[in-house]
Length: 291
Image 1 (cartoon, rainbow, N blue to C red):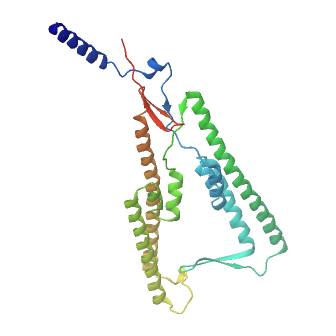
Image 2: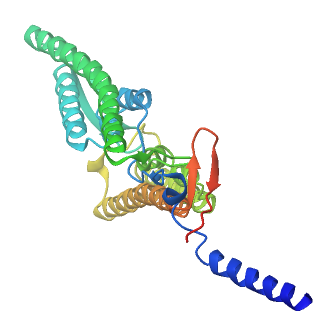
Image 3: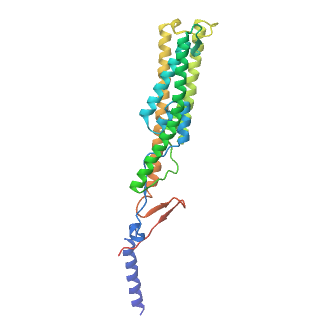
């Protein structure tokens, strides 16, 4: 009797081992439902944020919503109208210490004044339209994503995504801020320190030139400088611009790399055996037996 029980126990053990090797099969086999597939494309855009960006930067909201052609048109047209309007009623000058200076003209003709008013009104209307269009451009971008989700039966999951455009915009405003936004704190701190060092270099460069040419003057004009000093300023300017561009593009790349890591995390759970429930914010593991 004892031998029979041992034989039966051994048989059951072998059967369990055999079935276990085929235990992880498709969730569709057990539940009759298709496994959830995740959307890994570009994240949805915030329409209010798009409008806010276009308020400060013409066409910026359209760039944010990845409509680069429309954004470029808004930027160029508004910039052209602004420069033309300002040029009708003011005189431009440039000073190394103070930058561009604008002085009002005292002999502006009536025709120029009327033209300036007309162009200024057109610029204001275009800018308001630009802000409204940025909102609708973001909405259309989101609608295209919703259509893709429905057509391909995809689940939209972005638990912690970083927008590359926002990262670049932040780094343009303050070097290193875009990297910090993407949680690259070490790299962001280095860019911030580099920016401070460059600004200090520029400040001391200007002080040296001011003492060298005219300590009592309010500014230095380009014509006053020697060729060596001009080359020094051009070198500094190119170095500064290169640093800013590297900083901006690096922050954009950091955002893309951050998103790839997020996609890699969710791709681990997008197979047939594990599904994500967005309402309960939990994963479920489905076991099934294949005979």
